[in-house]
Structure formats: structure tokens, C-alpha cells
Amino acid sequence: MAVVRGFAYPLQLGTDGQLQLAEDISVVEQNIISVLETRPFERVMRADYGFDPGIFDTMEPTAINARIWLAVTTYCPAVSDLTVDGGISKADNGVYNARLNYQVNGTQAPPLNLSLNI
Image 1 (cartoon, rainbow, N blue to C red):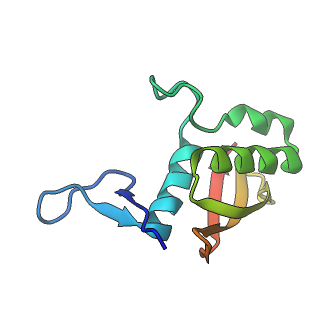
Image 2 (spheres, rainbow, N blue to C red):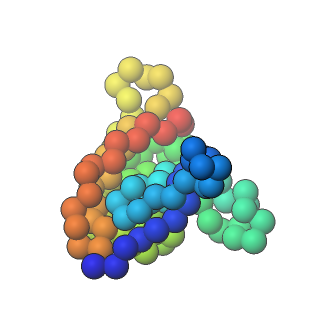
């Protein structure tokens, strides 16, 4: 199995002064978070990269889950067999809770639970 490597997200310095690296499931999880935290046009050279929070205006969990699935599968090629389950928080605090189940290069990753601000 190929090893997926990259810089840790968010960027951090290690004790040796070098940028910290992440591997495999850890780097893919960080890539998913990066995609969902980045808004379109925030990256000048990749204007379409990211997740548009305008989908929350629909307040329709099926549409929101589909948009999360599309963003992750488009920009995280190591992710496979992705399922997204989510819904608006019952506490009515402006939070959308999402649970992502996926595989990285054929290995099941632990579920990723995210709370996204609406």
C-alpha cells in the first residue's frame, strides 16, 4: 500500500524547527477538514477549491450531505467508500453535525465527526 504523506494541518513546527508532517489516515483526515473549512475563492490559484457554506440556506440535510460528499470526493483522491450522515443540531445553536465514514487506500478509517457552523 502506498503511503500518503503531507504537511500537518494546520501548519505546525516540530521540536526540531521543521514543519510537522502527517501520514496516511491522519493526512487524509486533515485534508478533509481543510476542504470543508476553505471557502470558494479563498485560494487564488484554485478558486473552485473548498466547500460553499451557502448550501446551509436550504436547511435540507440530504442536500447538505450530498454537497459535503461531493467536496470531499473531488479534492481528496485517497478517500473511497465515503458516506456522510448529518443533521442540524437539536440544540438549535446554529451547528450542523456531520459524521463521515470512509476508507483510505482500502483501509477503513475511524469515523470523522464534525460540527460545522451554519
